[in-house]
Length: 132
Image 1: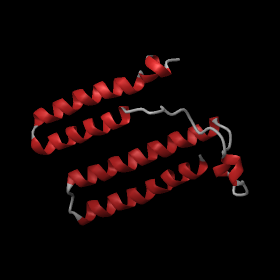
Image 2: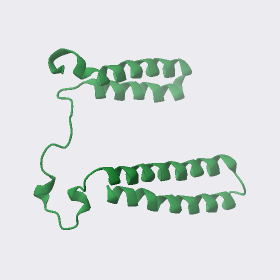
Image 3: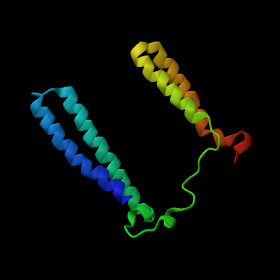
């Protein structure tokens, strides 16, 4: 996790400098400056979270410069076999974002479909063939 932590924490000062430059260059335009400031805060938050997480977990092969490829072999996580729910969530997100351009009624349809797909994905292992 050290690589990811450094990546995000090194981006935060860069974005802060860019925010200051943008604020001065645009003669005080507030929306863009505020958006860049929020970007600095979000990147800092992700870097801080990854820093805290890296202290709680064991070192990974990615963190060792002398590691071999074989050290990273094995299970990488639990994934849903033959799951259609990510596709449903993607389609719901596409409908939701298309609604921003077409009309607000479509945003509501996309949000409802997205909520249904998210609940289906979360509870996918609670029922059916792959129930635990």
